[in-house]
Each structure stands twice: as structure tokens, then as C-alpha cells.
Image (tube, rainbow, N blue to C red; front, side):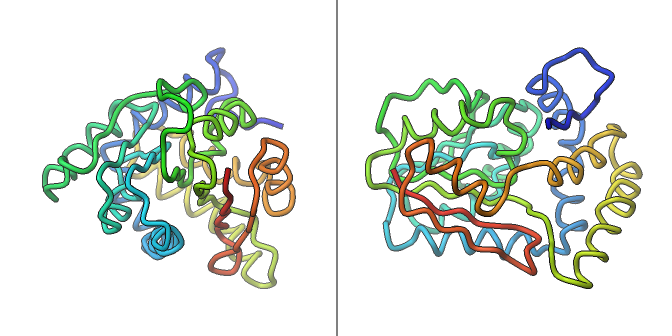
Length: 240
């Protein structure tokens, strides 16, 4: 069952997601860190540490947003990181951060569709996507494209929210997601649907064993799922 940012709109999910992130881009970083209590920064460090032994030289970061994960991955000293995102406004905000951090020689951001990428087969040493796969219009198509452009034997890592199952964290987090996140989101964002859609999309998105099976069916191997911070997020590691 798909969750749309605006169920009343006739636009495709891809178009709605693009518009939603364009709308919330100006306050996205501020809200993200407030709503996550900055735990999201720790999760990104986990991704970097997982990739570190492979020393990837060219990395693709899909659904890069304002480039937070790309910036974290730059600490691996790769030759190049390409950040791909549907939202031009998120990319513009990310470009400003890269300029301020003097990382434009390593990281470049571009507008693009993860389900139809311009890159040649077997190009990248590592591919990441943080909090973006649940926004794919066609999950299988997006993952198949990722598999195509990843070099054989190299790593693909997904960082994504998941459903908390442990009492009483589950009850607290469900209340926080259902009421607090939308309330705070509406205070700071001009898109009233965005911070209702984002928590709701987590509830219907495949996770855990189901997500691992999807990755296996696409053709990925050595699949590992690691639940983070009481299961609020999960990190999926796999290889081509």
C-alpha cells in the first residue's frame, strides 16, 4: 500500500515527493536535527564506519537531500562523491553547505531520478541512500538501477526509518510520530502534508526480513540488517 504526500492530488508520487521536498527545503536541516534530537548524525557515522574498510574512491549518494550523508562520507577521503536528488531546492541548499565546508572539489550534487540514472553499468565503488528509499515511486525499479551502476563485489547501504517494536519505546515513538512531528513540522514548514506523510510512510514501508528478501530478489548478496536506537532506524548492508 503506497502512501502519498497528498492523496487528493492527481500527480504521481514522484512529482509529489519532488514538490514536497522543494517546499520544505529552506527549513529541512533545522527541523531534521530538532525532530531527531540529532541522533541522525550518529546513524550517518555508522554508515561511514561500515564503508571505511573498503576505501571507496567513487561514491553515489542517492536521495542526497542537503548532502548530510555525502559530507559525512567525505571523511573517507574518496576521489569523488556524486549526490543525486529529485528536488532542485534541496540540492541548492546542499550546494551552499558544500561551499561553506569547502567540499565542492570532492562532492557534486545533481538533480536526477534514482529509477532512471544516467550512469554507466558497474561504475561506483559504493552507493548509499539515507531516508529516501521509501520515497521511491517504484522500489524494485530503483533498487535494480542501483544494482546496475554498482561495481561487482562493492557495497550498497540503506539507512531508513523502521517500526519500533519494543515496549514502552514503541508507544512513545508512535505518539511522537503521529502528533508531535506533524505539529512541529507545520509550525516551520509551508507544506502541511509533509510531516504527516513522512511518519506515515514508515508504517507501510517494508522493513527487516521483508526488505532483506527484496534486496536478495534484486540480486544483492551478503545482506545484513542492523537495527539502530531501539529500532527507530535500520541500516541495510549488502553487496553486488
